[in-house]
Image (tube, one colour):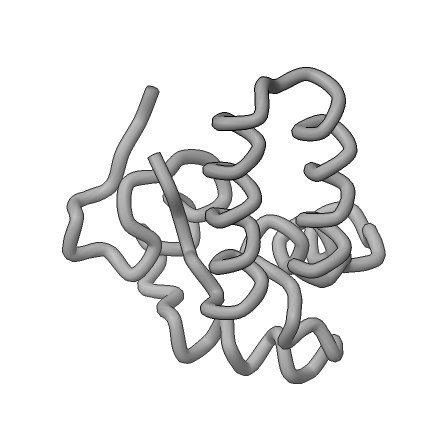
Length: 99
């Protein structure tokens, strides 16, 4: 597992974020990219998947809905309630990363 310093605009993470951080690519540039490709409601993963692989960016709301299928089928009610709470905040408040 690789990680960036907590002062990084991406927090502890790996892969494309590490490459972008190392080259000085910051939060402002990512926000501009999101505007350019009309992905302001998508997260960093979808933005980078679009740039690297021409994948259509999914909104956080769509990602959360997809996750709920798993949550509702494989977890107990306490786990479902907790993850539903987290997903609501992911959609509403643009949570950048959870570990």
